[in-house]
Image (tube, rainbow, N blue to C red; front, top):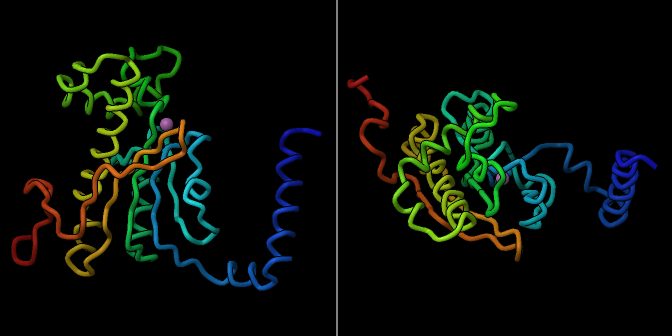
Length: 215
Ligand code: CO
């Protein structure tokens, strides 16, 4: 059997098992989604959002990319955020990074001439390193440096979220969403909270939206 055929077989078995346990399950699932969480995570296959928080289908609206980045010119990520905030009205956005992240480790290294697109994608993480260079360089090992940068990268993305007009408008009008920065540890499977920004948190003035007559 080919590896992908195993996936299709597993899917059949899963659907059957769920239907046996709860015959109305898929009718309810098909009707609508009302997730409470937008998850922005790394594409890494070892950090599957729904599984590590034991969530059922319908609970987590997700966007994943290399090194869980929120980049202001990335229409893909921004579209997901806009839909989650303005249409699904999620109360929480979670940016989840992980230790031993290949994207973060690569950002600490030289650019690879064979991967020009990835070099560009990782530039923002290099910028974060540059902003925290003293702290990171003071750490003893490459692993520690990469892991601290993984944490700082998550915190940067949460701050970036708070700078978007989509988020600021929702904060002002609906007192949501709360922004969370988490990091996942591969060797024990546990999540750790790094930062939480509730609605109305301070935003540097140059990132604030003008209001009313100001605009
Ligand atoms: Co990663």
